[in-house]
Image 1 (cartoon, rainbow, N blue to C red):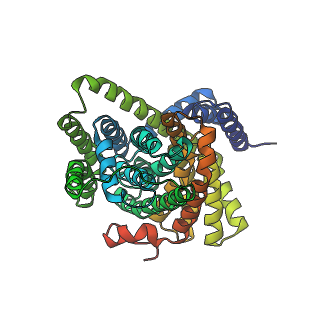
Image 2: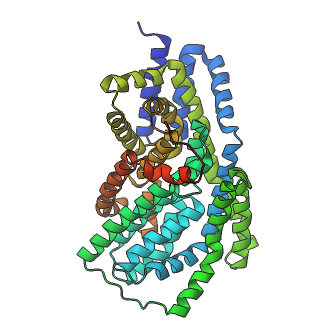
Image 3: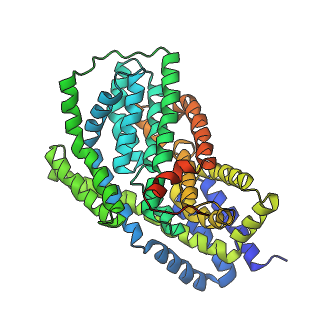
Length: 440
């Protein structure tokens, strides 16, 4: 006869898989099975009270206040003329190189992502400007969209990153150390996209056709982009220097972007209600995911599922390389149908104790998890960046996916380089004195 915990585990597994397959919103697909699983053990009234309390506790975190502020800052950047100036700066930096429009798109996404920390915002803002320019240069729409989609998630790794904030909450790891740990993997991500993009562009004989700005024009373009890039220095530098917390830095970023939008004369007072509404909508989605995932994590722990998974993994092998490889494959599969936020909230508490016992540093593990799950945002069926990038290009996702697979293969290879070469992640935070590596 099945124990109540086993019944709860079956309800969770079947319920979550069925609801996700039925295209039910992720928060609902997680929350409802969690309530039903808890009810099978505690009774409905006690389960409702316990699940509600866990959802509230999960969302009631000072650290998580940084997320709505960074989301609002990203929306303000999208509306405030910052994207155009960053693209112009990227053209000056790489415009003379082979396949210059590919390199401009990638570098611009890296710059915008490192300012906003939002992959969807980068794909939308940079794609909207770059698509017409790449079409004018002769690039096909599917290829141009694939370059934009593949490079946008670098913003999830480069600081400031909302995804690292969520990981920090779950793992009790320094946000400053995680932000710096994302720099190496973020640059590796961009380099992988650059190599594949330039190779494909040269193979298909795409050539630069537009004239390059003069030296004096280039200096003007770079000078116009300096205020936008200064936000990285203010936000990340302020955290590293201990001047303010990540939450305070996010609030400062909002004020800075607001002022910059008005200075650039791209943002009007009449635009603010729509900006606030857009940021609120995104924030509500994220916080509902956090709350529902917190309830699910509690029910899973109550049913003993993390211990079963840990025992199963360690029964396969106690070799660190083998365990990390298995975990990365599992997360790659999970990322195809689950957003990074709930995936981190659910699976990091399961996997982190296993890998730390094997000597893996939590900061390094955070970098590899975030990079892994960033791949999920550009793969179907729930790849938000893939859908936004295709929509900006005026395409269905099928032709974009057809051009995206070489980038995906390169990024998966880059992921395993990051996994098995820890120094890529931990060198910078260690050098800055933000962490001591495990075993160090």
